[in-house]
Image 1 (spheres, rainbow, N blue to C red):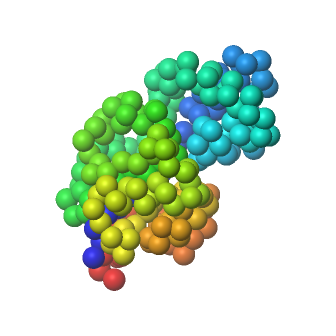
Image 2: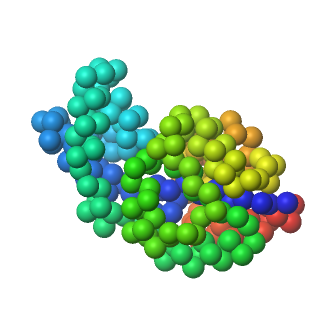
Length: 207
């Protein structure tokens, strides 16, 4: 029985490369740091902000602290307009919710409530977990486990939908099934587009 479908946010519900790059570059400009490198831009799609800062600072705790303080001063709302959902998400997710509980497990933090408001997804998810919950970011399984706990379901009845290797590793660590989305992740089950998800969920539920 398929009880819960958990979604990653960035790269699954929307493309966020341009938005995240603009956000981090604004922080680094405040600190007179160089802009993101191409590799940092790639990692910025799925790493938490603290993970991005740690990579940039090379373990220098003072630099990380300055980056965190600069980020806390920025309003992320203007960067939401650079997000690119593939279609209107609310009716798509509510249709899935007719058959399964749905959750959100993301390495995002304080931006999650405003993000859900921007995307018109307030009240849609049965459970939400993020790094603001003071759990380790993916690839640790903590966020996925917390989402399952809040939804009141078993790992056997859960599937996680993600677009990156760290999502796949987190799903494996949590002991849940995984559906990869797009060409950024390699896993036994991969769909090309979010639009293909309902058919794959039907296959899993029937299996």
